[in-house]
Length: 523
Image (cartoon, rainbow, N blue to C red; front, side, top):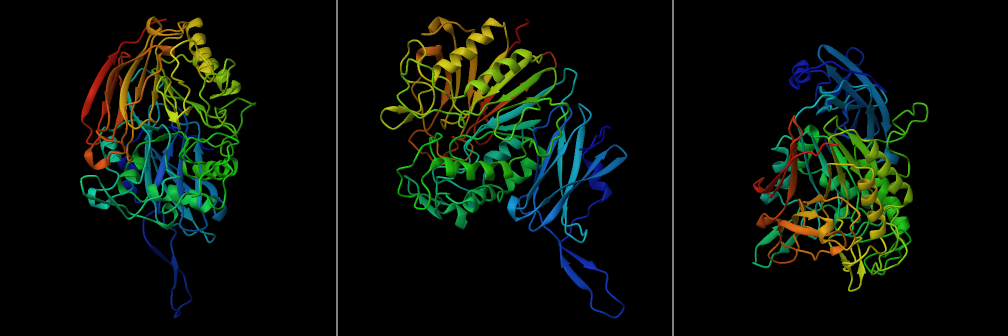
């Protein structure tokens, strides 16, 4: 751990030339002997920061070979070198450094590089981030989901994953990737002929040419995304808050499922595939890792070895609660069970109610990897999400969400907003008990944004149990519409110093399609 803290600018470290970049280093040699040329370790996937709060952050990088991650973090005139863990084949040459004790409301610059076993430092890159302030201050973030799905990957002819460039250009304080960070079940071909005859040309690597079954193939999917210049540029400057959903493993999966899909020739047990997928995902996301964080007197820092759901504290204006609606999920059924079935699980449900109740932030943003009232079919009868097409009283998985919403009302919790992706179109939904089959909750908003680099679909049917109303939506003209047509979406949220929350839904070019100002309610 390191404790750092004075204010400084992003250019300070760049001017210093510390951890200088370069491809080769020449070790010393006896007089008259030919110099020994040693290849420096590279950073083939760039650098990232993530889970940045008022006083902590996680740094991430991948090495080209075995090496120890080193971060030179600059704070004003103070410079400190923090040595992290060794990256090796077992970790897919990834490594993370957890920084705690950071000063709130400060901009940090960390130059990351790997040292080899001889102490030679390789090529370096800069990751920059700003910690959240403990005082009311303007802040903003973007969110979306669904990267490189339905056969649409990195197309160099069209500039690659340009949706990430559009998000980056809004200069957000952080980015929530609300799931489907990869499509492990979606092979990419070199060419795809679109319905209008245009040819989409994908960059293809061996690991993305088939469904992922082995750990190597799951890891290769994550490496593929980081080949894109737009993604690497954004992740170097915008901290990531990552969630997972189904396509990190396979479509619409649940624990215990056995696939009936001939593409899976080596392994069809979802629990085995999900274990490999989870390992690859966690290696590649700058998520707070319990092995990197000390435990102070047993306090819960919002992460445990088998737990992705967590809270990201962003100061007095904002707390972000990231859910995991996959790990504890019961099988997909029609969703009409009289007894409660799981999509969160009791432990996560209790955690969510407890932590939202404890939150003193003006806005409580809940990032869910599945929407609440949108019907997401899994075949002709079963349901992937919790909505079941029955507009009456909650049944099945709906009963968990009903318990959460009732608890929020009972404890008089105000200013709760839900965000999600998943359904491959953008929408603004307002939920109100006056329209609902279940009425024990206060009205709230759910904002849907995605995909950012995948096929566009929609719109889906809404389920009336929680009284959703479509206030705005934009979707594809035809199913699995190519990203070429621009119907790729992300959400942008900006909180003013006085607490006003402005949410906008934007397209591939960053154009604002719809916007809503939300005044905070006072307790």
